[in-house]
Image (cartoon, rainbow, N blue to C red; front, side, top):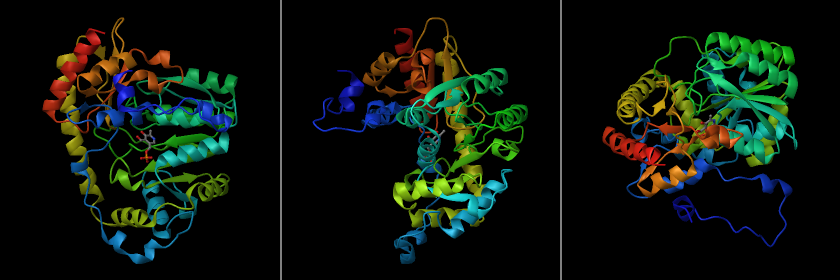
Amino acid sequence: MTYLESAVPLAPTQPEFELAHRTARLKSSLVRDILAAAAQPGMISFAGGLPAADLMPPLPLEAFANSALHQYGTSEGEPAYRSAVAEWIGSMGLEVSAEQVLALSGSQQGLDFAAKLFIDEDSPVLVEGPTYVAALQVFELFGADIASVPLTAEGPDLAAFEALLATRKPRCVYLIPCFQNPSGTCYSPAARAGIAELLDRYNVPLIEDEPYRSVALDVEHPMTPICALLHRASWIYLGSFSKILWPGLRIAYLAAHPALLPHLVRLKQAADLHTQRPGQAAVAHWLAGGTQASDLGKLCSGYRLRRNAMQAALARHFGDIADWQTPRGGLFFWLRLRGELSATRATLDKALAQGVAFMPGEAFFPDPLQGRQYLRLNYSRSTPEEMERGLATLAACIRGA
Ligand SMILES: Cc1ncc(COP(=O)(O)O)c(C=O)c1O
């Protein structure tokens, strides 16, 4: 039994009851499993995407004390929350009405809805390679036949993207254009325009997922949502407050093309009736208040210091064995190991046994073999001393692997 298995017990393999066929495709999320292992005392964790608790603004507790919000609410969401979110999305460059906004219980719920809306067994779906591990998890659950487009420093390789649209005819495309998880890539304006033109030409719906947009440390160009550039293709735009406010509240949103919204509202009704109301009120209060700029400024300054400390520690311990781009936003470093070196689950098990957690690259590709040379490291939760110690241990594990 590996260290990970002992920390995260496996479910019995032969249930005595009949399950839906799709459960055969239901994989455990490596991230969630590692998070459980990483919660052991003394562990240095570079594994999760957890924001730093010390950089979150105080929670407006009045929202939770308001008994009017303890009653059931509407599936679409609280009116004040939907209008505040429509304005917030408008400030990013995507003009939507409050009626186009649906409150979500985490943007992960939006991925679940998108999968239910577009994916039958063997439906072709196109994602970035690498991409968000829990998006792969839900797309695979619904039976998607997933292809990935390689990422360059500017965004997806446009020639490869067009070839995949033409040959695979995907039901939908899933992209994370701002500070992509895991690679940190932020699409250039030209890449955004190129993707929008191709999606319109091939008339393929876009799911644009942007939880890291406001964790922007060094941005040199406008990050116009690709949904705002579409004229013909339909779209779902997903956003979340998990990375900038209080992830435990699970408050997020989607905005969608008017033709898709009624289906999404019904999926919401069927899933959980509605998103919790006090959390929506707390976020609406923050959106309407005057502290956004200073709160986000404080958050980004704190993350900039941690990102820079991680960059310096990485240069010391990984400088001769890996290559990476310094992330300009988001919460991760994405490393490519040189030569024959790899960071597999075996490496992870070894590192966990020595008190260090990280995410092996294999989890982020539809074909895990593509990820053997990669690893993702979160920088938001470790002190400089933990970075130094943890990265020294991890580099030794990889060299000796
Ligand atoms: C790309 C991406 N999408 C969605 C999510 C889910 O976020 P939420 O907390 O809003 O469900 C995450 C969380 O890490 C993410 O990285």
